[in-house]
Amino acid sequence: MLYQQSKQQSIALVKTLAANGTSWILSDDYIGMEEVINSQSLFPDLNFALFTDNDNKVLAHSNREYVGLFLDDTVSLRMLDDSVGTLILFENGQQIDIATGVYVNGEKIGWARVSLNRGHIVNNLEVINRNGYFYMLLAVVVGSLFAILLAKGLTKAIRVMTTAAHDVREGARDVSFDVDRIDELGTLSSDLNDTVKTLAENEAELKRYQQGLEKIVKERTIELEESNSELLRANEVISEHNIQIEASYIKLKDMQKKLVETEKMSALAYLVRGVAHEMNTPLGIAITGNSCVSDKVREIKAYLSGTNITKERLLEYLQDTEEASEFVSTNIERATLLVERFKELDAQQYIDSNDPINIREHVSAALANQNLDEMEPKLMVSLDIADDINVLGNAKQFEQLLYHLFENSTLHAFDGIEDRQISITAKQKQSKAK
Image 1 (cartoon, one colour):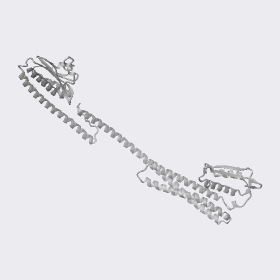
Image 2 (tube, rainbow, N blue to C red; image 1 turned 45 degrees about the vertical axis):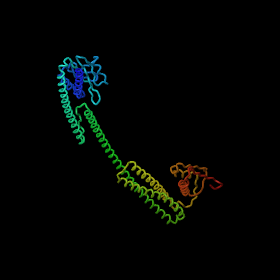
Image 3 (tube, one colour; image 1 turned 90 degrees about the vertical axis):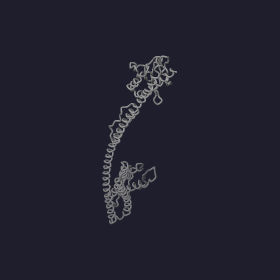
Image 4 (cartoon, one colour; image 1 turned 180 degrees about the vertical axis):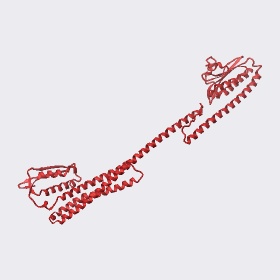
């Protein structure tokens, strides 16, 4: 019966020791563990008390010489069995050696072990009981004090991190969340430090991006200003073209009036009407193209006054304006050429004459002057005219006839035709050429 009571007291003692040492083992506080062990040294008949980790390394011992050593005797090696909670390592009439696991959240972090002498068990049983209650109360007090100290440490750490978080919210980035702890709060403070560092790097990258964007906007503004200058120059060119069109039109009217009023040119009235038709065609196209260019200029001005300006859209407007301007220039040149040719006409040129004309030479020269390759790149022209065919007539009239014939052919004869060919044939039969 007494030995059974001794056994129960030994179990209670070792569990009390384990409870008092849990927090110190968890925090690797060797001084705290030593203080707990020393608090048990006054227990009657105590041979020794100790704490070990799960590898049987002595963390604290009533005899400090054993601290740091590994227990490898047969009895101690039984503590390596993780499945056992409380283990009676040795028991006889003289002593009892008992160990129990130290647990945190169901996980064993070490062992608490005591060895008691049973030599005076009968005489000292009451003393043991009384001291046991006293030490249990002391353990409760020590545990309570530890809980208070732990709570104060947590409060201080939380206050430090709260202050740092407030500084970050106010814009500071050189703050520290360090709380000098190795528990969950210490891990959290390290993560928060990394987060603030990443935030500062992202803000710096964003600032660099904004600076680059400002540079791009500035460059685009310069490009738009240059494009606007080009547009203004194009508008000036268009205005000059308008003046040329009006001048050509006035010249045409004057020429028509002179031709009609001149009695010597009355025979060419039908030719004037045909030429007027030829002149009205390029001039009408030029006026239409000029109107298109003016519309494009107004569209570009309206576009430039807006906010959604893109380089691609502006280049598209400029491309359209350039094409229309070239179209106008081509037709102006064509009308001007016609006017210049009309200047060459006078009454003397159309007086009947019987000059010898070599048909092949005049046709070849007319084709060369006409530049049919530029007007119709796909056009094939073939000549079947002997070198010695000559006729009598007005060479100037013959050249004008060939010019209008070739021009009308290239303008009106090949609409919708892919295989474009002109064949010119002349044969001499007796005294006539056909």
